[in-house]
Amino acid sequence: MKTKLRKALMGAVASGALMFAAAPASAVEIEYWQYFFDARVTAMEQLIENFEAANPDITVTMTHFPYADYRTRTAVAIPAGEGPDVVQLFYGWLNDYIEADLIQPLPTDTFDPAVLDEEFFPMVQAMKRDDAYFALPTAVRSLALFYNTRLFEAAGIDSPPTTLDELVETAAALTERDGAGNITQVGITTGMTAQDHHWFREVLVRQFGGEPYQDDYQTVNYNTDAGLAALDFYTGLEDEHGVTQVGFMDEPQAAFRAGRAGMHIDGSFRIGALNGTRGLEWGVAELPAGPDGTQSNYSSYWVNAITTKAEGERYDAAVKFMEYITSEEAMQIWLEVVGELPARAEAGMTDENMNDPVFGPFIRGLEYAHTTKFADESAQRQIIMDMVARTDIEGQSLEDSLAVAAQAEQDLLDDYYGR
Image (cartoon, rainbow, N blue to C red; front, side, top):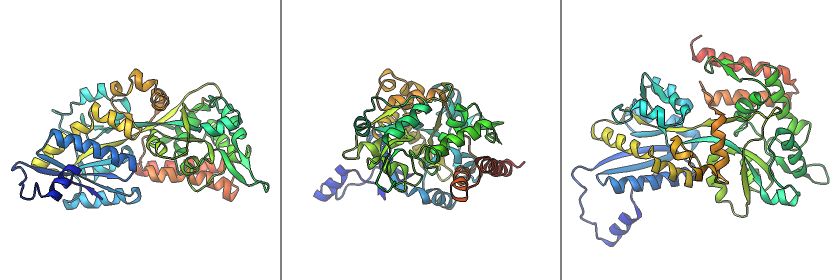
């Protein structure tokens, strides 16, 4: 799907008013690509409209694809001189995009690295190579606990849990089963296919006293007592406490949106979708603290970059567009439409945003969040998924499955870093 013409222009053409209008001699068209996610598309449509109004000589065409196809399509199109001039990519893909010569560094006269270091959240500095940024985000993400306020009220629960022990107790009060013992409502969703692999690595492992990686994320370090305790807690939600079921209603977020889950851990990007869910009443809280009160969170982001396809006047237009979509104005729009948090600290850490009942828990979570530096995000996620599946399907011990996962991920990292 492409977003080329504004409604006003379409109306004018339909009436014949612009039938013979010619484009300005200096007009330039650039293309922007992102993966399809309803709220993201809506937000970018608004940003493009604002940008074009301020830059009438530039037209921005947006193209979006399903997530599963997105990375492959960009990798094929750009070398062929087709596709986007500005592209959105996951932060964990940056090295691959640079090595494949798909993106080019941002001009330092416009994007001064010293200024960006000061104004953006520190996690964004991972986008810098040789004193130049290759990409910048409009927004950043963290995790929080979504909870169904109707189910809480029905169960007589006054407030969301603040510790992992309270999380288990609350989930038990929210879980329901039919006469045959089949679970019909989970107290909390689980599933490593969603955000739980981040919850395990950067939150639970740290809360049980460990550190998931060492050597700038090049050495796996969760095959430890802390990693085992984290895995035991996670699998115990289903196996010991019976407050969840992996695969319940296929996807964790689907169960929560359907009102069949009391709690759900997810990213701030889920806000837009939940806002559009009829009949769902929900709240947000910071992630429950660990056994000794330790708070931890995971942060991530999608970035925008100028591709190697952009040259000449398209390059100049792409630089202008990058300036706007990484501005404070754009970040506030993205926050309100998508729910993802401003990447500039000053834009995000306002009193209004910090105290907002929905955005606030995510923004506060950024203060103690960690960003995993992935070599291959999808492959590393699969390793964690397989780790849990082996204990569930094959009956492998937690100790053995954890060790297998750690070795598999270390082999992946060694191969990636050429060790």
